[in-house]
Image 1: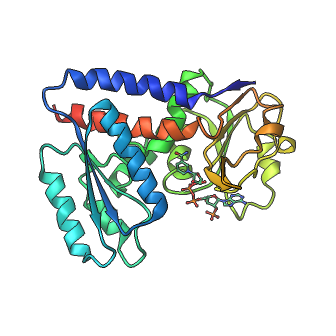
Image 2: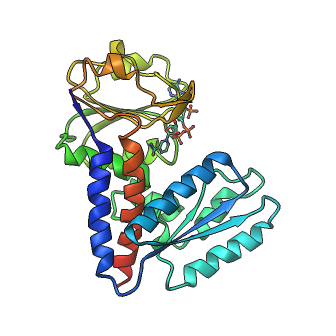
Length: 276
Ligand code: NAP
């Protein structure tokens, strides 16, 4: 069994981006809009800020109280759309339920949508067109490519159908000619699908959902989950039992997480370079 070492690959990507930015006349920049004070969001935003600072991307954080009128947020996004010094825009999810998430996300101009979540960019991905791809699925594809995991003609099972992970990954895998099955909480018998899979991506947010008896020998397993159990981070895969059968497996931490951040930095650079 070999580890899909996202930490190492992410570091390589960050070094390349840092070098590229040293040669830039104007610094690339990322703007993050936050509504409310969600604890997890505060941590994720801090991590993004740290990664941006490390490579030289100018990071701007706009934090709004959850009683801010939606129009003020929409107007801020429009201002950032028109600001030639802003290359990427993120609205940190989740946002409080009273806001119209779709309307807010769709206000982001497609060329700065570094999370790949506007309807237009989502549609382009589904249709196999070049577009900005959500960071976690992009990170997973980059990781599999690095380890030369063949996708064409393979049986891929994705557990989880969220718009941030499962759904875009389905399109990316299909675009690579994999045969893709997507499972979710209403799937009657998960093991029936995973046992035949060459590649399994687990993004459910359920600790140890995938166990060794559910996989075939030699499969490739990507663990997206981030769970806190007894104050320790763990994924959605029972690492001990699955790693005995898998040929490749991504660890938590050190697998998909660092790749997600590296992909965000890559997407900012894509926007920056597209503007030239
Ligand atoms: P999400 O929006 O909550 O979606 C979870 C998906 O898993 C849903 O489609 C749900 O099915 C499915 N699911 C839940 N329980 C299941 C079960 N017992 N069997 C089969 N499917 C089940 O979550 P998400 O945003 O995609 O994130 C998933 C996990 O990945 C979380 O732990 C999150 O923290 C982590 N994550 C990690 C990164 C990273 O960078 N490493 C990035 C994003 C997310 P239904 O649709 O039927 O409800």
